[in-house]
Length: 147
Image (tube, helix red, strand yellow):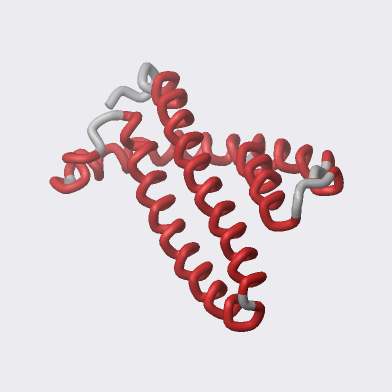
């Protein structure tokens, strides 16, 4: 949550210009609090659902080829859903871009270009963060939940 908040601040700078009013301390504090609460809820859900998910992946011929340890259990789904989300986001951005270019010409193209750069940066940073998170959490959880 905190990483997504910081990335949103940076990418909004491409759209609105960088100025001091964009960074809000209360919003950062709320991102930290909701990240902690989300982590606790996610940990509890993982604790109760690990065995059913583990057994389902082991029984599935397709999934067992790609998910073979704790790291790939976290990394592959986040990668796939990030790519799907980026594709849908780019479709929406292309539709918005055609309208913006039709209405505003070069100004619309420049604004869509800035939004596109923001989407690409967000995608790359999210992929990198989720990869790092998957590596870190799998190293800590593998002794507790053997694959």
